Image (cartoon, rainbow, N blue to C red; front, side, top):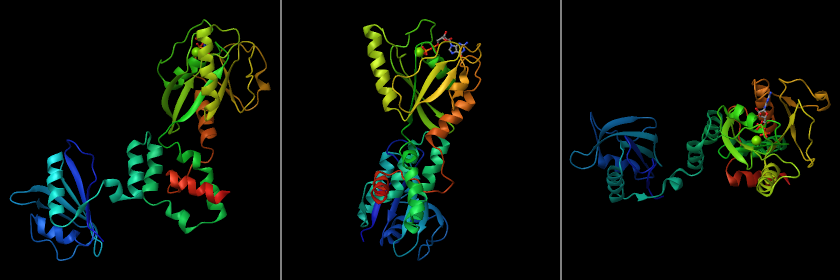
Length: 337
Ligand SMILES: Nc1nc2c(ncn2[C@@H]2O[C@H](COP(=O)(O)OP(=O)(O)O)[C@@H](O)[C@H]2O)c(=O)[nH]1
Ligand SMILES: [Mg+2]
């Protein structure tokens, strides 16, 4: 097999860059290019050893050479100074000794794709899941390919699709029930217009944050009501689309005024807001609803828990496989038919 060389760190100015080398020639290339600060490189590489020294002709760059795998397919990493020219020089030296340069995704294979996702993980919780996947969690699926494992994996597909891309959660309901206030209270800062005049929010406004470690894009929709003007009407159309396409739809009811129910009966999670005010109707009629006050903050924690549970009813255990690459998802879907 060819000996491959790739730069694993992004191009540009940085303190450190990593150049990796793998193949039958890797260790002999290291012998020719690298001079340890003390002693000599051993005749054969041994996994897990590090060496400090110079790489390159004349003075060379100060580098650390790490042995990731020993013979016969040895793999080594050179941790050199960052910068485009330093990296280019080291890669060219390896090429001159017989290595072939390949792009880093090709060098790393599936692990690299998880690491690429890991770099974009928006929360510690999603990063931990991607870490497990980069560390080979999927091998359990290949080892234990039974019906229970597969059905559990299938359950986790939506989560796998939302480790980087946020879940879309729509806030819908009649004007003035407190959708924008709830969004602001949840996001923790003022982002949308809150006003006492019905119909002030004319457009769908989205804010991204995390609920229970899951990335969420909360969409505050224009109040859906009949008899609106043309401009407001366009906002209402966009609101309907955003609400229809969302992963989770919250219908906000005003606990202190006559309730307006959705005309689209689909799946809604009901939120009864303004519970700091005297009740205008019997909330007990709406089972399984969350009760909040955007004004006092009451019930927001419970609302977050309910949203988290609706999005990810059974979160993965540490080390559990989660399908997140397109081919993994396609494979699970194919074996589940
Ligand atoms: N007392 C009370 N007033 C609220 C609450 N939530 C919103 N409001 C008020 O209700 C009005 C309409 O709120 P807004 O968020 O603009 O409603 P939206 O049209 O559904 O987006 C504003 O005057 C808010 O201050 C709440 O929980 N308690
Ligand atoms: Mg509003």
